[in-house]
Structures are given as C-alpha cells and as structure tokens.
Amino acid sequence: MRAIKPVAPYRALYGLRICVADLTLPDYPPADLRYETRFLVEDEVLRFAEHVPTLRPKFTHEALTRGDRCYAILDGDRLASYGWYATQPLVVAFGLYLHFDPAYAYMHTGYTNPDYRGQRLHGIGMARALEALTDEGSRGLVSCVDTDNLRSLRSCDRMGYRRFGVLRVLGKGARAWSHASAGCAEYGFKLSPSPDSAPEALRSAPRAA
View 1 (cartoon, rainbow, N blue to C red):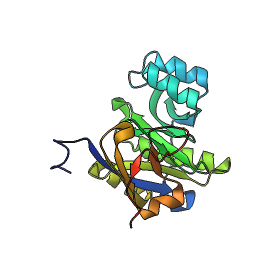
View 2 (cartoon, rainbow, N blue to C red; view 1 turned 90 degrees about the vertical axis):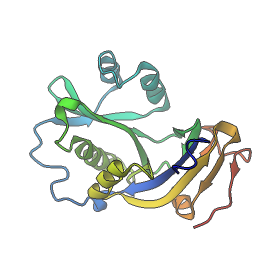
View 3 (cartoon, helix red, strand yellow; view 1 turned 180 degrees about the vertical axis):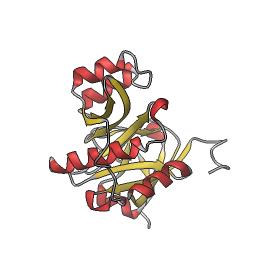
C-alpha cells in the first residue's frame, strides 16, 4: 500500500460485521451511563448541524435524503458523540458506492466531541444503536475500515466486530478497478459507480478467497 498510494488512488477496506451476540464486554454498553442515548429526529439533526462543524450541511442533507439515521449520545443539550446508520448504498471510496445486504444497517461517520473523548462513547453509541436496530428487526451492523487504520481496527476488535472480507479499489469512479474477496458475497458487499446497481461497466476482478 505504501508503494501504490503515491502513484495511484488505492484503498483496501476490511468488511466488518457485528450482532448483539458478538458484543464482547459485559458492560458494553454500561447500564449506569449518565448520558441520554437515542436516534435523533430530523429537526434535531438540522439544529445540531447549525453549530456542530462535523455535521456539514451537504453531508447532512445527503444522509437524511438517503434515509440514514443519526444515533446520538447527549449531555443535556450538547451532542457528545454520534454515528450514522444507513440501509441504502452510499459512497465509501473514490466516488464508488458500497452495496450491502439491507437486512443489516451500515454504520458510518462516527464522531465524539473532544470534550468527551476517553469515555469509550463511540463504542457505547454503536452498541446501543445495534441493540435498538436489532429490536426493530435488523440482523446487525456492517461497516468497513481501511486495512491500515490500526487504531480503528483495534477498537472494532475490542467491541466484537468480525472481519468477513476485503474490498480493494484502484482508480476512481467508473474507470476504477475493484475486487471483493469471497467473504463479501454473504453480506452483499460490492462496489459500483451507481447507487442503483453494480453495472458491468465497473471492471471487477474475479472473486477469490
């Protein structure tokens, strides 16, 4: 990866999955958490977007239009931490859309306010969102993390995420080359320049383990 990245757009992403039964720690999430945790309604998201820099207007509009939901940890009227959960394809790398089994929710764009870091709020928020979505009928969460993002991978491993495959992308947009390892098929993981389908125009290599 160090050799390729300076000369061409390249990313390798682990596909990850977690279900409620996979949660590894007995206090994940802790029963005595002093903050409020829940999905925000659209008006709340738009209100926070007015003064939370990471909730950029363009991103927020696209996420809400797609039907994504924002799960928040609230300290009174302060947004301590949040994460987004999608059931529709979304862009993950170089303009390409990730398609996945909609029986799962795709977790993306988690953020914790610097004033609240060190309390494991990112993982706690994911765990509570996972429980809430499972109660609604979801099978669990899927996500992807760059294979060289060791800090995020350690956090996911601690929580109980399981790696099921690798997505590789070289180039950008419709002219990109992509490859999904065999384990991705079970979760519908594939890349496409279109949110509607994965057309043959995307030059995908044959699947391999």
